[in-house]
Image (cartoon, rainbow, N blue to C red; front, side, top):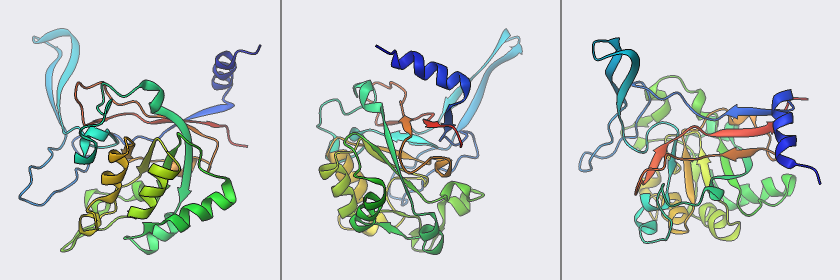
Length: 261
């Protein structure tokens, strides 16, 4: 019997399987989601030096990090939303690790998102994608490619005006289809959150969070390099820090895909 893991190691070593980093750099310039002033804000990233080969530590360098759980490329656990607060295994430290790895289904709506910053993914869009690429398998990561990560600067990335932020995301019906009918692991975006920028005005507000987390599903936000993945055939590894009771976590999301032809 062939050893699948040995074969994978050989393919990685030869470059036949590529590792694609889907993670944005995390630092003081990383954009942070804004909330209305009546709500507590999430802090940006700060690094406070503990020592750097000096009197505080002559042979080592390290820092204290301060940031919100949902900063930069990050994971949303079900406990993050009120609809998922009472589910079993709903926090970063209790989610079974087998649920953090799955096949990727990349739905490319980059042109539509460029033309309409408030573009919404609908069930019809998903079904059209499936007609070309096959049904979304149970336990898949569904990733919405918008090329939003290519925007330069925090203002362009958040893309807010007097009516709030404008960025693409799913409709309530699309989230219901993915969570309940397709039974995905979770939904990921290249934007600052997994809902559309205007989702606070939807019914219900923030439907992707409400539906996905209520169904015990996960979110991945602020991804990048989705343009380097095929529509199907890649594997995504998205393991948050094992924070006790954690509602989410910055993480490094990796994808495995066959090498370029």
